[in-house]
Structures are given as C-alpha cells and as structure tokens.
Image (cartoon, rainbow, N blue to C red; front, side, top):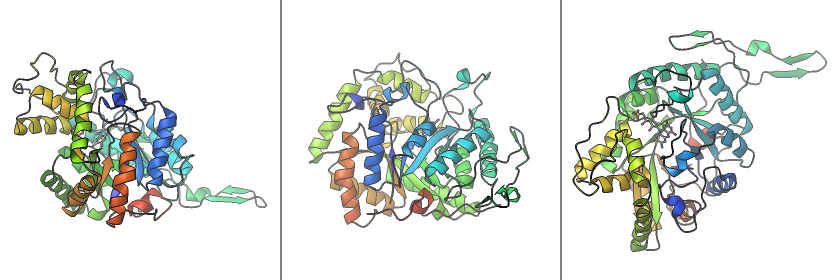
Length: 426
Ligand SMILES: Cc1cc2nc3c(=O)[nH]c(=O)nc-3n(C[C@H](O)[C@H](O)[C@H](O)COP(=O)(O)O)c2cc1C
C-alpha cells in the first residue's frame, strides 16, 4: 500500500483550524517541516501540496494564503532524506520551460524525490496572468497534453553523467550528451535544451489529478500516480479498472499507474469518540463560511437557498469539473439538504471520510486495496498536528503488522519507493 500525506497545514476540514490543539496556518513553516518529517518517520511515500493561483476573502481557510508549493518542496528537500516531495503546478498558467526547470531543480536538490501533480486549474486564474479569458475545460486539457509532452521532452535534454571535469584536458562537460528539443506546436515553441541535468530517478514522477474523461485520457498517456476523490468501493473500483484499461491501451503497464484516492481519517479510541470528533468539527462549520466554500466548489451561487429544505435544482455550468458533478450526484442519490451537502464539502471536499477506531480505519484501507479500488491513499488529516499524529501512531503500525505497508524505505528515490521504472529514453 502506498501512502501520501496531503499537507494542507490549516487542516483539510474547513473548520479544522478551530479544533482544540490545532496549530493554524498554511504559512506556518515550522508546522509544515514537522509534519513532513513526521510523515517520513512513518515511512510515507510522499508529502503532497496542492496549489491555488488566486484568492478570495471567502475561500476555504487553507486556501486564502498559499505559498508556492515548489519553493516549499525545495526547502523540505534540505530537511528530509527519503520521503517523496510532490507539488501541484498548472499547465494552463505556467510555461513548460520554467516549470520543467524548477521541477528538475527540486528533483536535483532532493536527489530524485520530486513529483509533479499535473493540473489544468479549474478556478479562473486569468485575472492574475494577463489573459483575456480562462480556457474552457476541454481546451485546457488540449493545452495540457502538449505542455506535458514538452516538459517530458525537455527532461530528455541530457544523457546520464555528462560532467567530464577533466582539468588537465580542459573539458568541463560533454556537450555531445546534450540534446535540443526544437518543439514547435500549436501552443508552445520551445527549442531547449534544458539547462538542468537529470536526477538519480531520471525525472520527477508524474501525477495527474483530474478525473473527467479528458483528465483520464491525459493520465492514461502520462501519469504514474493518479489522485482522485472516490466515495465508495464499487465506484472506486470502476474508476480504477476503467483507468487501468486505458493505461494498458496506451501500451503501458497498468501496474505503473498507481491510483491513490484521498481519505480523511477521523480516529477515536472508540467508534463513538470518533463520531463525536467529527460532530465537534461540524459544529464549527455551521458558524463559518461553508456556503461560500460550497459556492466556490460548485461554481454556482447557493447563498439564496434555504439550508434545511430539499436540495434546490442546481444546474452546473457546461464543462464543470468532475468533482462538482460527483458532489451533486452524491447529494441527489443520498437526498441531502443544502446544509448536509455543505458539511460534506467543508469536511473533505468530496473525498471519503472514514470515522472509527484505528483498527476500523486500517481495515477499511485494506479492503479498498484488496477490492481493487486503490493502490494506496492520499491521507488528508482534518487538522494538524493531531489528525496526522493519530494516524501515524495508531493506524500505520496496524498496516505494518498486517504486512501491507513498509517498515523501512526500499530505495533512496521516490520512483524506487513507488516501484516505478526509470523513464524510457527517447
Ligand atoms: C487530491 C487532489 C488534489 C488536487 N489538487 C489540485 C490543486 O491543487 N489545484 C488544482 O487546480 N486542481 C487540483 N486537483 C484537480 C482538480 O480537481 C481537477 O483539475 C479538476 O477537477 C478539473 O479536472 P477534471 O474535471 O478532469 O477533474 C486535485 C485533485 C485531487 C483529486
């Protein structure tokens, strides 16, 4: 079983920062370092940061301020030695050369532990990027396909071990080992070569986190890890089987595309205590900006509707992203009121919440892996540090005793620990 820590330092629950003992702050660097090191002691495969490119006063507390994930990873590479370092970066609002270079640098600094979460950015970032408009959903994926191909091409700029450093002969580097890309496409013109050489894992691991049809198609071609939000095992299994079939259809080994749904654990000494914890978190939600968060997630203004009546007939915008579709579908299937839906969104934004004892949480995770719904999980503590500490102290030892999770890292690189091959050279 693979484990990632999805690190959102204000807590994944919208009111997690208010939980007794929680330390607040996405910019609390000390907390971020401590949580990453705790995940490393627990032998997590990686720590992962999402990203946002705009902010509003009403956002989820952990999204109002958002330091650059890749800069954060560079710093974390210096205070860790084994854990993978995964960061989100947008194919809609970046240039392939800059991003290939920064990611290669983080991969270098960490000696082969970097990963890139490829996203197309669903929130309109155009206001901050001198653009006239936010490209629509399918166009964003079309741009992403070319973007990812260019980045991968740039990461092929150097054959291994190009440095000669022959002082006598005056040969610094073997330029015959350097290759230009000379890409001219619909959206990008990039000559290359990249001015950073490869790390011990070849290049950063590629993660993809969009679950729509075009998102899955992009994942099938490129992703080595897929992040997704799934609510129950049959749906997770159907998603995993469908995606792995698409990976195989691309001529790739489905075992080299690891599916890691998000999971928020709420752990108590008894099941009742765990439910009490969640109820306390939900009581804080009711008094916060839950409706604004729901509006942001669905991209529909829900502020005018009664909270405790039946769910109003909400129509999603054309090309809405897959999470909005999932949330509305779920609300209709379960007959949720608007208040119940905003609790669901405020809790884990459509990811599954598992409430119970450590043994119950561990069993749930094992059932999902055995049942073909996941290769591992992106753990989303509701609040920090307590939500992570409960998991590492109580659930991880059970997973180790059951023989499904490592006691020691197998390799020095992220690719090695995930069991992924070195990238093929063109
Ligand atoms: C665990 C996880 C983390 C994600 N993090 C981000 C993020 O930080 N920034 C972002 O723009 N999208 C993020 N996404 C992806 C968006 O949900 C996705 O791009 C959006 O849903 C649009 O694509 P889709 O319709 O193909 O799903 C994340 C998804 C998952 C499952």
